[in-house]
Length: 213
Image (cartoon, rainbow, N blue to C red; front, side, top):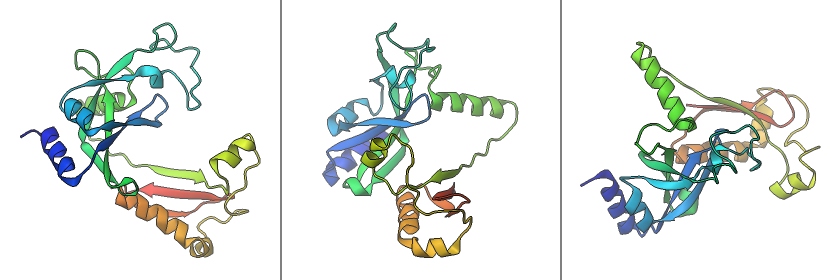
């Protein structure tokens, strides 16, 4: 029995009715959609299509004016994609439905020329061929604001209120007073198989730093 068939059988036995797919756009941002379990069953071991506009616009869905691969001149056709069945995550906040990463592929099933995921795999393969072993880790520094998506848009994304004022890098006191939020972030990442090695306040108003384990 294939991996895809086993997954579908498992989901049906659990009453799972849909799957979420996410793709990496040209800026490294996840884009995605829900597909029915029947659709997933039909494409799990093969390929399907997804509009390649995500490889030609920015994070505000504005077209890059120097893009040659896709645009109005190509009419934004579907690009083929393949689901990486080894990337399954269960979304506990969505009734435990599965999430998978997908990657774009060329029509001859070769790596896609500009898919960020394919390009990274190509670089790693070249390094391996030269006798190098790649080790990658990610550490993020980011601002946390006392805003909603709507209030930030209403302000034109300017003069946003930070979660905490002033500078206080590595503040233990702030991790005490905001412990619910810190622990919620770490628990959420742990639940989705993205454990954080460390989280702390960085220097700057409302700035945090998180390192993926």
